[in-house]
Amino acid sequence: MADQAPKVVVTRRLPEPVETRLAELFEVELCESDKPMSRDALADAVSRADVLVPTLGDKIDAGMLAGAENLKLIANYGAGVDHIDVETARARGIQVSNTPGVLTDDTADMTMALILGVTRRMKEGVNLMQSGDWTGWSPMALMGHRVGGKRLGILGMGRIGQAVAQRAKAFGMQVHYHNRRRLHADIERPLEARYWESLDQMLARVDVLSVNAPHTPATFHLLNARRLKLMKPTACVINTARGEVIDENALTRALRNGELAGAGLDVFEHGASVNPRLIDLPNVLLLPHMGSATVEGRIEMGEKVIINIKTFADGHRPPDLVVP
Ligand code: DGY
Image: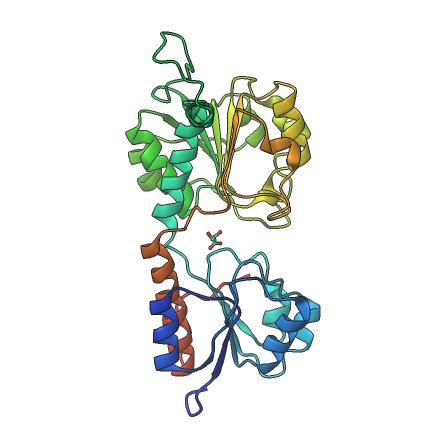
């Protein structure tokens, strides 16, 4: 691609500095809408692009890729690539890159916000203030639980899981984790983290569970009804990764039946179609997938996209290629 400028097609509005830089560097077709494209519009975009810049709402499956005549690189704006059929892309000679690292701290911060928000009953406190019914301080009103000394189980100990572990340790929590592979001792030791090969055994012991695993065929509904039942009724579940890792109906039932004490969710099994029976629960704090939503992080994600495209356009291997 070194001798010919690639045509870059972007599927969503991106932060202004990112769009400006893309337009300075490449022949780019920016998107005017902040709504996800219809499937037809996306297929059209795919068919026109040498380089496509999609985001997590854009389902790029095998059918979509069948119409990708010139596509050589999918430079995803985001870390998770579960909306892209990476295997088919690879089989068709299309490279896929993402934006790892730059959203780690923001997502870990939001995970801590949810852990504290749920354990300290912030939703109920906010609701009370907004209702105008608060009558003043009371010795036993809205008592939550202290996180210090409690066991945090982290499901998925990649970059974000480790960043959550660092923060949780600073809050005095005891870190436990389950991961496909045990971490090297040099990483595990400073976190004083205990590895559990058995997820079931870890679930039975933790006070808070933080899901930080990607959505893959292996993690789909990893937290199913059977596993949720292993948890203590006083425990809560936090998810800032992908909704599909938890069986949302089973979680809703467990919360409604008092089999779990609370949940803090930034992601949902069916995207924006959130189970309505979750929404009104006082012990459930829901956010609209905003874990990485900082001005700084979203610009840095754009910078990563640009570096990946620029490196590709110069005839080299993009630094953030996703290897299936
Ligand atoms: C990602 O990049 O995959 C995140 O979920 C967006 O916040």
